[in-house]
Image (cartoon, rainbow, N blue to C red; front, side, top):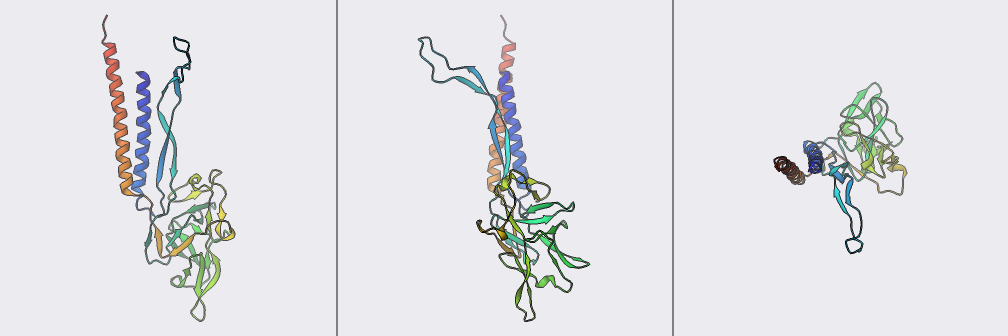
Length: 271
């Protein structure tokens, strides 16, 4: 019965983690580019009550007797499915259709990756610079910040589906500027490390970032200017998962109560 107490307690702890994950998904349901997280569980060690032996007639038993000792959280993985595209009519908003990520340079000089395409044009001493809402510089296909010389109007800058930056020439026709927005892909995006906000960093588990512009063996992503990618969290699914987690938590709680009552009855036994 003491074993059942600890087993049920591990179940309650695991379900609490599940509820925490669901709560985080629901709280980010309106976060641009957010990818839902899924808690995964695994069983703990099994205790052998009886190994494979023979019965009283000498016949071997086909199975042993083992009892599980509970569960624990094995991983919390992000689901990188495509979110809905929402029109904003803002020239500095970009949505990715596909498996790509924007490259940005953080304040400490390190490189990070994001699906959040809510960006801004910052005015500097040398002209315009494309940055995200936190001021991190957006990088082009060469890994350099995307800048525009003085005299360029942000309202006339357009970006095609391949990420090429265009600007009207003297004939008022959109012409390539030679700037290409940098998009990368990962062999295992679920292995990316979450830094803060929607920023992700490369790890050994994610694999090395592959630049789409230079790679021919991958499916290229598309960029939609004037759109943002919404979160891929489905409120209905999360509410169902929340109910399932709550019921599992209650059942583990009742198992602890039942074990406690059994221990109480055992303590009250008299000779």
